Image (cartoon, rainbow, N blue to C red; front, side):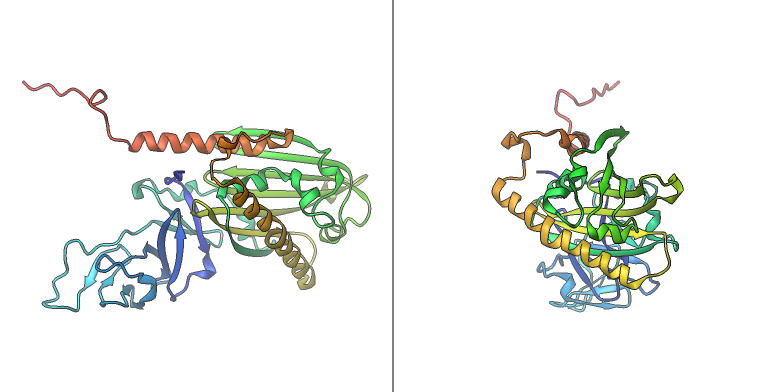
Length: 355
C-alpha cells in the first residue's frame, strides 16, 4: 500500500536528537537524524552511495557524517564534501537524499515528499506540549501493525471499556453521544458520556472521586495519522468552569507497511506540581498502550494477513464512523498524489503546434 508523502510526520521527540547519529525507518526509507553544531536538526538517507553502508554506523565530523566503511563525508544537504581516496575528486553521483525537517512542539517533524512543498505552517497545533502551564508526560513505542490500525484505535474509543477495563473505560462509554465532523481534510470524532462513574485511576487523575460525571473524549485527526485527544471531566452539578480537561497527542508514523512509530503525550493544566501524580499517569498510560493496545493491534495485524482492511469486508459498527471517515480522506489524498505524480499518457499529453 502506498503512503501519503506530501505531509508532515513525526520523526522523533526533539530530545532524542543529539550529536549521536539516530537511525530510524520512516515510510520504508532508512533515515539518519542528528544535530549540527548550531543545534539545528538534519535528516539524510541512511545509505552511503559507494557501497551502501549505513551512514548511521559512522561518526560526525563537524556537521558532516563520515561513512565508517571508506570515509566519504556528507553534509546535511546530502552532498559529498570529502573523498579521502586517490586525488580526492568527489564523484558527481556521490549524493544522498536529504529531507526537510522542522522542530515544533518539542517534536521533530519530517517531510518525505517533494521538498518544495514542505510548509511548516501546515503542522497541526499541539500547543499544550510547549505551554508552561501544562504538566506533561510522554512516551514512544514501536508497534508491529499497520499505522491505520493504530489510527482506528484512537478514532474509535468505544474499545476502552473492553480493552482497558478498570483503567480508562466504563459502561457509560458505549452509551455516549457521538458525532463525526469533517472540516477540509481534518476529521473530528467526538464522544460525550453522562452519569459516568470513572474508573479508580481516572478518579485520581481528574480529582472527581466517585461522583457521577460527564466526560468528553474528542479526537482531532489530520493526515497522515496525527491525532490530538481532548478529555474533559465535569462532576454532575458543578459549573462548567470546574471541569478538568487534559490534552493529549497520538502521533503515528509508518516505519514500514506493518510497523508503526507511536509517539504519545498527555498534559494537565490544573493543580500544583505533583511528581507522584505524574508518575501514576505515566505508568497508567504505558500500561494501556504497551500492554493492552499494542498486543491487540499486533494480533489483529497477524490475524488479518494483509494491510488492506477493506479487502476483508469487515463488519461495521455504529462506533466506526470516525475511523472510516479518516480512512476515506487518506485514501483520496493518496490517490490525488499518485495522479499528480503519474507521467502523462499519449492521450493526455498537450498538443504543441510548430509554425
